[in-house]
Image (cartoon, rainbow, N blue to C red; front, side, top):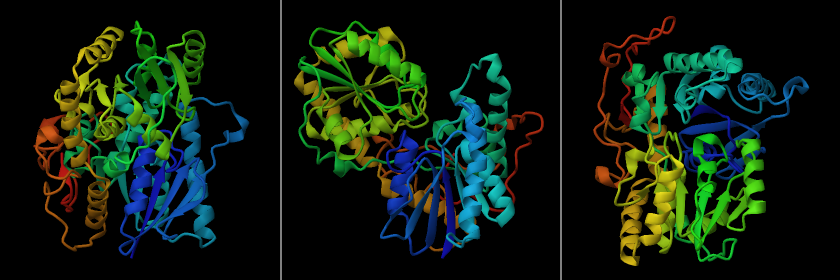
Length: 445
């Protein structure tokens, strides 16, 4: 039995985004005969999964030293909370000394490195949202903080035994392309059967067509562009997203628009069966994101389409473009005009065209399962820890069910045991060349 410690900046229940959903599904499915898994999760309750065999301990999110909330600075402070929480539990004998630390994003990387250094645990770094690729333009006041965060992300890749990516496209971006020799692609999944058990609900508004936005209310997701379009007379816009992880000012703006416009409705945070019911009740889901490492909401929307109603319109950017096709979704782009065009395109589609799109979407959703995602991650852990029981060769599994590329498979990945294309790392960040271990699980970038 090997001890695994997961550090996550999102909680598995009442989560702010796709990372929390990912963590929940990993914890619910991990093999407890092979791994003793403990997760320290920011803002979580102390809970267990799998009859108490998998444990979650919350990490306190109250302001450090009473300082006001300040974006990136808060995240730096939170690293100390992760270390303190680990030491508290470890010294009390509540959790065991970890053999492997699975850190999620740069937001837990410093804490993970410190715990690994003090315990001798082997680090694995999982990327779900890259600070290097999410924030392209930074206000001068935050430039130093942002540059430090980007260096943390780069060095987390450098010191880790493996780098896990949710899409091949993300693994090709800077700085991750320097670490292709130890990168493994572990795509997210969707509980397809759960979305097939949606219950009939009514969405707010009096118009017959319901257009739904689901996700954090932040600039990256472009909800403000959706509520700014010229809304067709027969359409209600419904926005579903919580306060946690969102931009408070954008939420205030949305609430103000909803108060003035009877075609705009904000229903706040929803989860579990209620979220599934709402997604299945939408005629059109719009996901006009400017940046998406994977785009889990899009996969959920495709799964919701099996109920015979929901059609997806998405931007096809980054990870979205890796599994979406023009047959399965409308490309809504990332501008107000392109989003408006996508909504009008949907309104002009006939019943047969909509159903054809749903059928194509269903094939994609069925190709991605959480069971395969968890198996890919477990194979990475086994490889790093030297567990040799029938671990597949590189490229043999990629977290999908082996469908064609059009149906969502991350295909064409190749093992690359050299630094990408002779590129040079930034000064002070020489890429690690990998040692003797071969990343022999999952699909390698």
